[in-house]
Amino acid sequence: MLQVLEAMGQAPTEDELFEMISEVDDNMSGSIDFGEFLKVVESHKNRSENLDDENDLLDAFVAWRGNADKSGCVQVRELG
View 1 (spheres, one colour):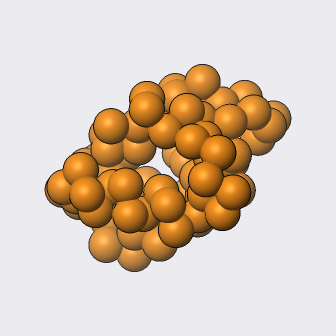
View 2 (tube, helix red, strand yellow):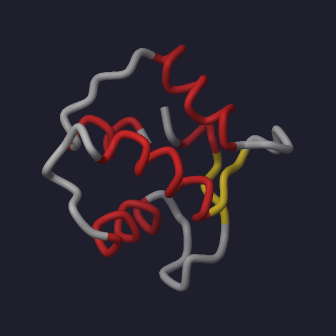
View 3 (cartoon, rainbow, N blue to C red):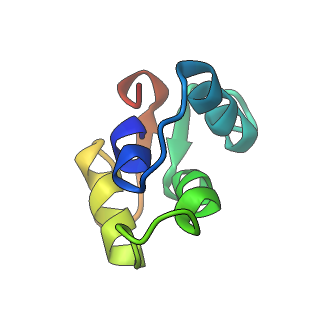
């Protein structure tokens, strides 16, 4: 997650990253699904021109072991 946000021109602290994730990880499972992942990234998308379509977001999700069909989850510990 941090690398995606950095590619978007963001530099969140570890605390800010945790806060962003906790905002979408409603059940505090320690993982976020594609929809939750998309919410975090899209909330910061307006600040960047580097990731400008869903395909880029899906590529980032897959890079963190999500599935290309938008299923699966990304483990929060892998995002830092």
